[in-house]
Image (cartoon, rainbow, N blue to C red; front, side):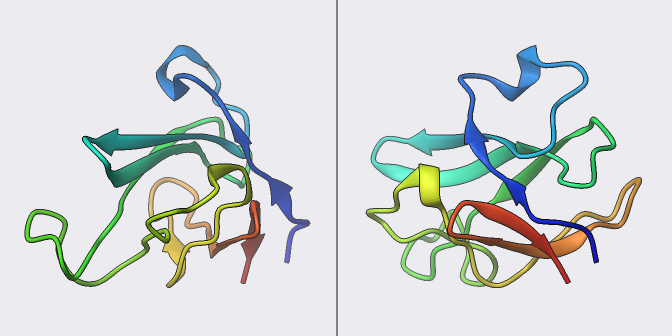
Length: 102
């Protein structure tokens, strides 16, 4: 298991190359959180994207990681886990603003 990686907000993950581990850019449409661009916690330097889900929102779907509606993005917790499948296969959780590998 690797050490926890503290997340930090950035205005645009796309502007960072390589993307530092823990960089996060939450994205919204209107008042709904719809996803999170982030630097892979393993340190590979790649940008990753995670769609949020919401069982009450037909466009977002009903299963997968999602924040609370009033989430503090600097201390974000997502459930269930995050699985990064390419190229590094990082699997873990974002809990209280820290990426933690399982």
